Length: 472
Ligand SMILES: C[S@@+](CC[C@H](N)C(=O)[O-])C[C@H]1O[C@@H](n2cnc3c(N)ncnc32)[C@H](O)[C@@H]1O
Image (cartoon, rainbow, N blue to C red; front, side, top):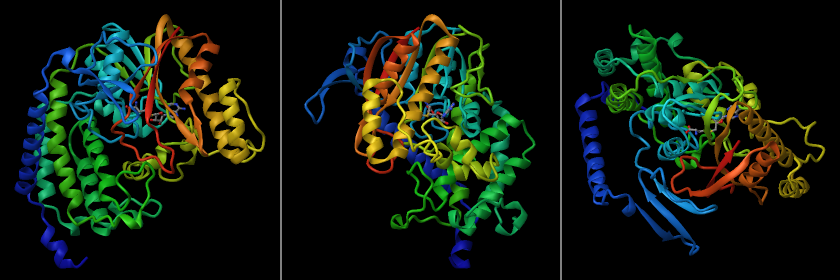
């Protein structure tokens, strides 16, 4: 990139960014007006449609009615409109819930002031929805980066403090000078200069420094850090949409000087009004907790504590969460070196040692064991990964059983995998394991996936999520 191009891109123009955002707002408003054409009567938002295989599916647009009639095994297509409402859209997260789903389950199966648990809370969608429905909640996630995002999404902020820090940041972003960045301001991490162009490294370091130097509350800084984190993948040289952080030469991804400055400015201008909106409607006396050092297989709460648990556990070997967020984790300083210890703690991990997979392991569910044996013939390592996944999920079911009150529900949203060409129906095996532990299956229903934020590698596609309602 010649110096001339760099100079012509700096400093960024605030008018240009505001004009772009106004255009986007108008486009969204137009879309919204089109949506408004759908009469807001519950019965008209629910209709039976047929899919490409001529199967009947019930389509529900927007909020799911609390008393929706559900026959066991029925399949639904839920169309979500709230994925970026309030703080829900603050950061991408693989296999994130669409908000209407936990909202529906929470309102259907619990009461105000109840305690809700999500043992695989990820970016905290369940917790934000619990809060908005006036329920206390706990979110457990092994990954400190997820807990960081989730915490920010449920923390109200002071409006005037936010607005004054916003003006200060915008002013400093517009005045950016690459020469102000010293080499010591740029963090070092593996292959840094392959992941990022030089200009972007300087811009990101500048933004990070601005946030670190703000004289404000830690909560506000954390909010800006999540905004910062949310732009990192887009301005890196890695594929924007893949769950693994990889550079794909074929994509010919273009990143230009000033992109990081522009994207960060856009993000804060979009997200600040939303967190202000959340802060204004923030319910009083509702607690939301993300305990550190807790694992879904070892839940350190009193027996019979929770009134409801709602979750979407990881898939078998489908998403490598630490690798998904490795660049963000390095920039935010969560890990300086290897991500392997965190990877090993992930349920569904591919990071397994060869001493374990020489032998065939069985879980004690006939259908699952048959599939594990077939996979073992093709690939002993993957057979062990599948077995270990179910063994870990069994531990989780036992733990949730313990901390849940009796007669209360544990609801899991689980997808299937194809492992070495073998369909591995996790949801059925999880239901069998749950029955062994003492749960009864209240009902189960399918949720067709039309818009997943993840591109699953190989041909391991996921089409229907199954919502399993278990009763203690
Ligand atoms: C499908 S994601 C959850 C997404 C979440 N529903 C949302 O809306 O953002 C699954 C999560 O399980 C977490 N996880 C994996 N192994 C875990 C373990 N042993 N204990 C707790 N969390 C774990 C992963 O870090 C990941 O965030």
